[in-house]
Length: 408
Image 1 (spheres, rainbow, N blue to C red):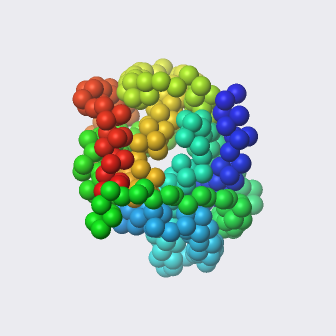
Image 2 (image 1 turned 135 degrees about the vertical axis):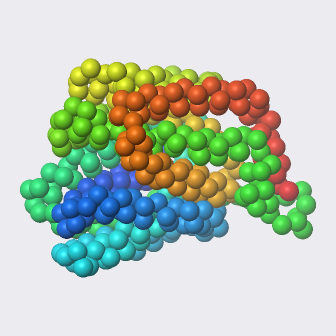
Image 3 (image 1 turned 30 degrees about the vertical axis):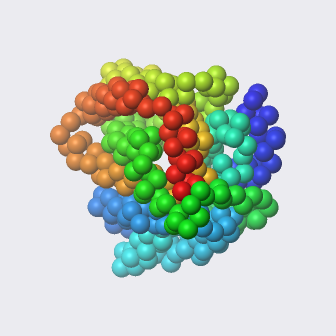
């Protein structure tokens, strides 16, 4: 109910939500169709691996750049510009009909990933710029609904559309979603961030790195962005492997797995009204629950039980995401949020991409169930480590310190 009340009160966020949903579904359409196209033209797993490698590279540079731009220029203008530029890029695969021109498809992958790397931190920094502080928890819960809807709608219908209408239609729809997103964003109103009056006006504004290095809390959050994908990357690969290899359910199984993944994120949003206090403790607790879920996954006897375990894993993950995003948005000074989210996107996506590649090699050594056991142990270990590190922090003290740093 409180999610719905926050939704009604935040009219600006509604437009950002629908734009993000269009963007996310379009990206899923493109991914499903392009992976099918690459395999159809090459019949090679190397082509698929190259796709994911190329997607990872832009985040190293472009995510921090997008974040820095968000702190200096109009977030609305940046989001619309990135959307519009990506419209013709999304159509590049339409001319790829032969292996000799696969480079065009890979060029499109690189350029779209570049846009996505810049877009993500700008959008994250836009949320606290248009949403009231006391509504951030509920809006971050609604973000999990969007994430789940993208998984359910984008992943499942992308393949159906390609099958019924042709493998190139999803690329046209992808371009159209960018247009829809840009039109929605054109109606968003973002207030300019009021710069704090500095105690020493002649000194230069502290850099983002200086802000991070001077805060134990921000270092902790970056450490989490580095370590959590070590497990998440393997986790992402295992989802399809369980459907295809462990239970031999084929494409229908993959679709159901992603459907239950998305459903877990959606349902997690309805727990937001229970997450008012002790958000740090809840982050640690639900990361541990994710680990327990993977331990159960390693011994799951049937495909049906696996679906419900996957649902539980993403339910726990969604709740921890809500808590973590809310704390960061409230803690990081407004004029540095773009840069900080750029750093987190760079670290998390790069680590995630590397670990997805590593997972392929690990599956040559371990069975999927053994790998699930390993991932579960990693989550539990991380929860204990984070719990110990957070016990050494005072977020109130850190917030005051960050506010003073911004005024220097």
